[in-house]
Image (tube, rainbow, N blue to C red; front, side, top):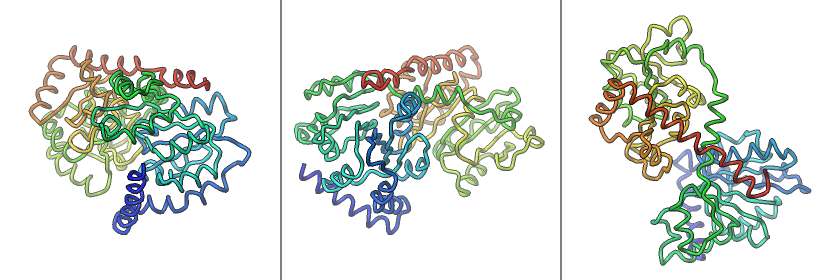
Length: 409
């Protein structure tokens, strides 16, 4: 692991250099420089903490159902939540479900020692793709139980290469790995890791809870007004350039666009594509003026998971770029989900495609053919939506099963 540790030091140095020019890197370095100063005043020296670590916001949402169930069932438990990415920490640094929220230090032996000497950990939970060998080894040496939550493994990962045996040793430090699918379990068995259970994705529990508590928005209800509605969630320019032209002449369909980025330049770019449609931004909408529009642009954050309730078809952005966003947030409302081709790393997308509740779009032609089919065949649309919702509900209960197996139910 010497080469790995050297690589971590080099990576930390590169991030420090990048912080001179990049805002995200600057936030990361600033957060890392004050980790111990942040947590020392908050740590109860007499308490032991359950540590949840997520790389970013998406992984946090997979750990959140566990955190909140523990908080409700065992209010005496102290929770430490760490992030690697600023996109997770900056959004959830005030999360009330944890006693302490901070960054995880870079995975060097000295950082591990300092961090674990500062706060007593009872159990540690690393979510999905988080495997930090020096931290795992440091926790294991102290006799602390470590669990991997909602993890997925693939053939091309270093663990399963002949030259990755040293890195694979880190997996032996987990007391148990709760994986999402059979292939992950088989891969782990192939390298001698047998403390593995297939439990699925904890996000199903989360989106069901969010849907049950989803908010009603009178302005959006009045905007939709019983009309068929297409919702694009977390869209990027490549997505918008695909679906907006199709709906330009279809004025009988309401269009709700919730872009991934809501800076002014992107909003204006969306508006430039809406030639011939009557659009308005949510920040400018009122109950008095909303009825005259057929396109609503959501120019704020925090509403999308509830807005899906108003849709008949959902398009999830990111599939023509870094990867699709959360498809389960829409599927839980019994509506079919569409997404771009970069979805291979997302098990839920693969499952939804197989069950005909999710559909891959590769270009404007495939988009047009599918939407035309939905519009001309209401039975097909309804069945696709039911397939999507049934899939989410069939995967519920994962969080309770995990907590039961580790003795925290």
